[in-house]
Amino acid sequence: MRYYTRRRPHVDRCASAWLLKRFEDPKAEFAFVEEGDRLPGAIPFDMSGAELGHRRGRCTFEAILAKHKLKDPALVELGRIIRSADLLDADETLEGPGMDLLFRGLLHLTQDDHAVLALAEPILDALYAALRERGSRRVRREPSRRKR
Image (cartoon, rainbow, N blue to C red; front, side, top):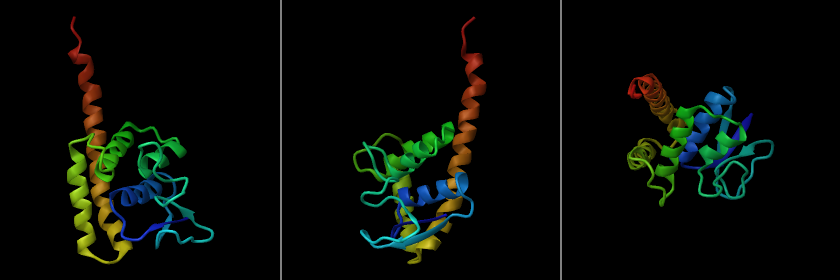
């Protein structure tokens, strides 16, 4: 499937492209356009009026999670972090401001939007792996916390 979004992808657009490619369509292709432009035959995301976009205080990443019924706890937590990094009034997580700064930095490394997505992939892979590990540690520890 082919998707399109606005040029100069920041944290939510990078994470959304990563999510689509990793968990929905490994052959997904991405194109970048100016706000308001359309790309016939492709699915828009993180653009005004797009189904896969900001809704009710949630970011595009979370809209994709909901649409595709992705319930992995690590992805849900990653969604909270992405929202915290992407939305100015969503200071929900400690990781959000750092993610915002990191993804702003990626835009300074290259003018090629596809290269920005490529640079973002290992960062998101690593964060997802860490969140999965953190979640499994919590599950393993929980029984030992019970009082007898």
